[in-house]
Image (cartoon, rainbow, N blue to C red; front, side, top):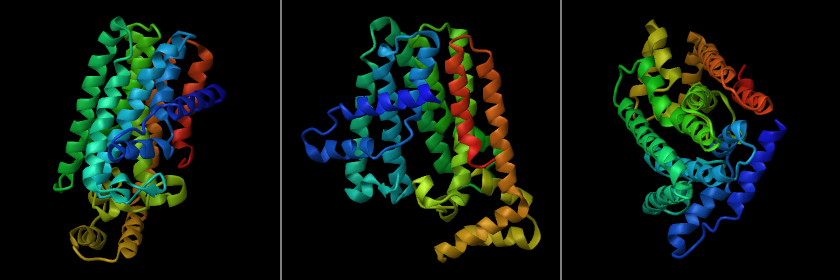
Length: 324
């Protein structure tokens, strides 16, 4: 993972050099804050690594890579408002530290900044990357809308849920990879294989996020544990638990979902116990491994620097190491 680490360091260094704090400070300080409190930098690293698969010179990919990362963080600001989340990366969310209006407006500014970074590509490359970015940005919004609609439905299927997380999470990982590959000179076939690699590891990554929200710990997860349970979010865990439970157990789970007043700690503990009782904890682990293996099948078909391919495979493996 040496090269991936080097790319992560390069992204962090370049981000630190960006002048996000500007005037008016009420608009730009929250951007500087959210971009400065860390993150895995998965998207820009994947963009740069995909470029390096086909070209030793990754300089042209650096600015659009930052654009993908800024766009990702823009979605977090708005997601946290919609979810009323209190913590992001072990720090107060922007709407808590400032207020809701600030989080919305600063997020809007981040979206514009993301486009500014993408637009730094030379014209021939921009004509290929901009439609990809536009389509991806719309799909992320579609995924978020499905996520919100699912909160009001009791009949969400697993297929619907997988499609929602494909849109909300996986397409941005996939676009980062495909964009980097195209910038590096890959043909459409090779770039699309990397896109499929990204879709599969992206779905696996979101499944891991679902798992950790219930079974992780706050320090490593970066957010309060049990948020999905308290919000009755239709996650892979909850949908399967509703389908697999029966009798008294099913009624208890439905009762927790329908309660307006409850003790948060008790609800999290009780629902987690039901998850374990009906076996969805193991089910989500196996599903995540399935998507990892599907991603590897796509990556194996990619022609390019073998050392970078090995690093990408190792990077994807890290997504499931904590729950195998």
